[in-house]
Image (cartoon, rainbow, N blue to C red; front, top):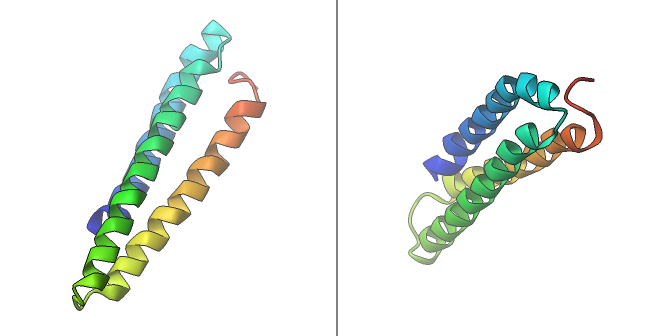
Length: 99
């Protein structure tokens, strides 16, 4: 659950900062791959964390553990980060890094 609540925003933040750092290199090379690859990699990591959080939430629900709210919050945060990662990737696909 903790991975969904804290891990996914940290993955998004790392991808965003990596994109800003690599934007100068992408502008010099006239290539979008410098900024697209970290975002796609981070999106895959966020999807993997979401799957893990969903399995953990289902296990807690099956065992009747007293943490259903935390499980739903973790799953909701992870799903929200998937939407945020896709929204972050859209301008990278459309615009050139020098724009």
